[in-house]
Length: 307
Image (cartoon, rainbow, N blue to C red; front, side, top):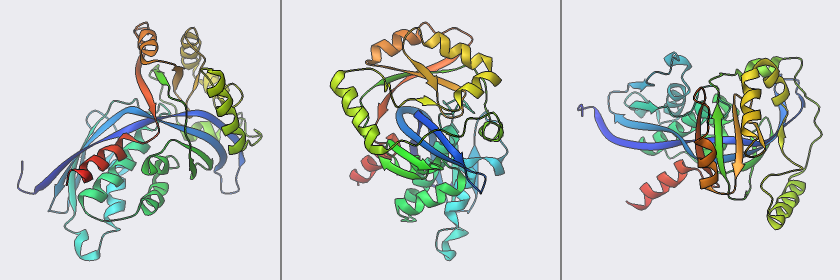
């Protein structure tokens, strides 16, 4: 290890699913009012942080073809460093290795999760001692989905996704399928054909539906489910529609985020794995369990308890 590397930290950056995504309207600032249910998963990317004392931040993103100044990991590190005491900023550095497992442009939060893990990891490594609230505020500057990963809880979200309420979801296992389509979130939200007039639902109504679901033992939220982006995305990317139709032979399937991944919920890991084994060779996929607490937070809690 080079002499300027002081400490190594490895952390996961989990995927998310949007079990519900409703678009209520467009705001004057151009953003959209949303309601969504973020479900965190126990599968995602991996980041390795090596602390440096020479003030340099470098990111090895492997085969991910993104310029450094556009890489959310690099931007998160630089944003966090500006929060440190002025006399420390020039010496704080890190070599960061990003091990990508999640498809780019898949609607499962890969870049946002990587940015959040960078904020959490370097806050620990650099001993910045920023609160979760402050880190979430920084994350919001990087993207609307970053705060949910910073806070690390499966959550009901409103506003542009920044108003988060932790929520308990039933334990499920998921098969997530990617056709390789990279869908631009900006492109979808700019499209005039996007539905923007869904009726708002309340968190109380959602929780009542969840209680009924658990009581009846159903495998999917029947009343509160669906994704307002799905019709447009499937029109623009027929391969995504094909993937959803294939997956629905096993369980109800829908789009996550603005795409392009499709997912379905299963009651057991075995059922999800069995469906995954039948996935057409042209597509990629993974199975994962839904979790209430982010694997990133779990890892940091274990590190703290070991000292």
